[in-house]
Length: 323
Image (cartoon, rainbow, N blue to C red; front, side):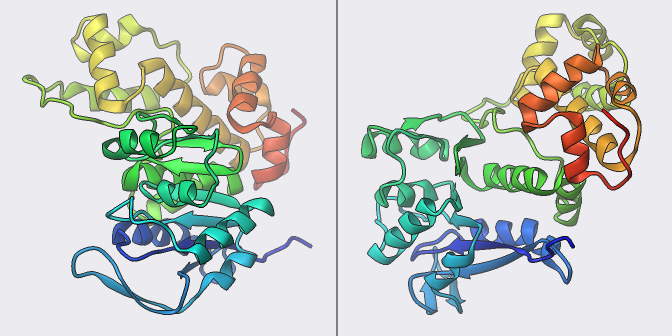
């Protein structure tokens, strides 16, 4: 029989915690943990009782670090002052959880607590762009990607603040339970579909003199025509821009090139079809705009680590066709 035990998500908080970091975890994971669901979220600290957050915000903790022993995912919420340090109890609990293979997530400035716990040496991470230089100076052996929304390094995940954290949470849901579950989580939270981690943080961008309002419509049109050959000339014409203007504005609005965005959307739709239909892989590939089934298999394996048959077996809701 399938195991219906919920996946334990522990959110570790410290004095000066950023409240939205905690609320966002609850918003994404908790609806999926309703009776019969797949996650249970518990907020904890090094002791139960009142905890002071930023400004006048505070919270009453009912769980201590004992909940980390059963947690499959442990998240470090950000703090207003990332140089404030981490308690020895939290540092020891994090090292123990990492050693047993738990999934560790640093939300924004929460990455500093991971470094102070000795978990970042030689690792690739990100944080909010405002603190990236401080992170480099504080932990010289760490490879800091100051532009990524979120970064994965083995079982360690880090995000670029609150918005990047939300994208990361949806990505974790997708990996655990597939595209449809991630879409459901986004819909519950009234969020847009998740962005990939290689999309860039929007840092110090000047307000454009001219607004290209047509690009949102072009992207919607692209979603309706994923199975067709979409060229840069065609897309630029749709937007009434030159090829160079279109590519530049598209990246400024989405953080990625038109082709990166299109590939991600084609893969998202293909995964949805694998999960919810029994269409042959060749049909799914053609329907979503991949030149061949072999090309689709390559991109899917690169993105998920699985071929279509394995993906369908893991997340499908229908009887699979051999693929």
